[in-house]
Length: 106
Length: 116
Image (tube, rainbow over all chains, first blue to last red; front, top):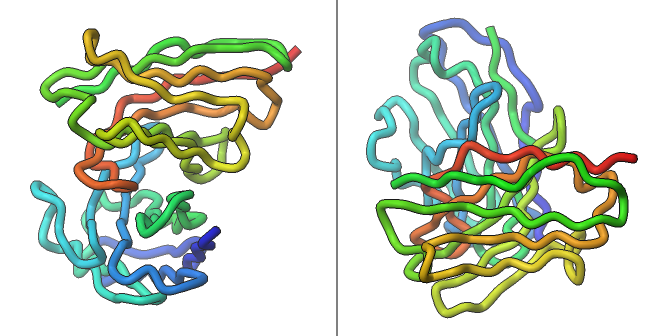
């Protein structure tokens, strides 16, 4: 199985900050990497698919990059509603494993 | 597009439960439909997927115990869960995807608690 790791596990930031979260796969997954946001008590929401494609309706302050084994999610300027947990997931092969998550709080 | 899960509840270890996910706004048979779960206070865990072709895949942790299926006439996704264990306690989400492993719409989740 492909293992996904994320760093940092958590971070504290302020409104307006630029935030970068990294995700690493245990083997190459090409660009089969998706990012999800989960607010407390809510279902996950797709932000980025295929490494760098913004899901329609998602604000442009979110962006993704990377290929192979190393990927990043960047929030260019934090809004209050961005304080949440972010998960990466590989969709290269089953099982479609998720990373452990990165919690972004104030 | 809407996904509404049901069927969760309290069940004893070794018991069975059948989750349902009613879809509207699209046809489940034309999409990749997945189940993803989240244990209390933990991260997301992919459970199973059914492709539009009918092919199914499972996480090792549930293989042989869980069965994913769909009822095209009712536009509903199911997850039959047998031989339940404490570690199966979680919120179970159904999700729709335009591609395998990708989930672009999620239900609100249904809680399954396995305890005596």
